[in-house]
Image (cartoon, rainbow, N blue to C red; front, side):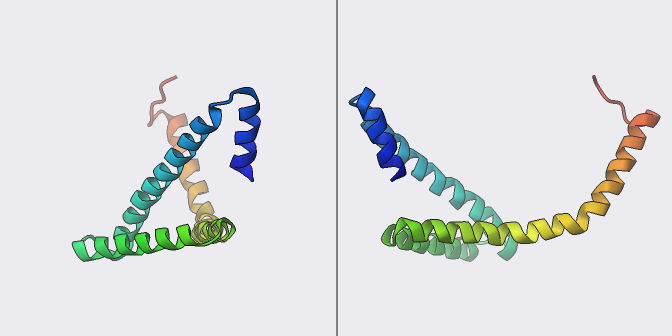
Amino acid sequence: KGIALTSSAFATGISWFPYVLTFAAVLFAFSTMISWSYYGMRAWTYLFGHGKAQEMSYKVLFLIFIIIGASVKLGAVLSFSDAMLFAMALPNIVGLYFLAPVVKRELASFMAKIKSGEIKVNN
């Protein structure tokens, strides 16, 4: 009910605003699909290499998910999106945990170089 409630609320004050809100929501959805497609393609080519076959397979898979996403209920799409974002975040969080000592060591080295004057800092 989110956008419908927002639209009704704005319509009480500005009668034509629901049209602007609809247009903005469509632009937001379209730009989200474009950006997810772009970043997904970058990740796909990083994992599977560059080439026409790899890019075409990603595009076909992305289009299949667009069709599925447009066909099922919104709650299922949001649950799936949340699960996939969690699936991407989990290995990154584990990596951050294991790399924390390296980051701490490199930061200490960097700060020591600043204090010694080896690295100049512009204030």
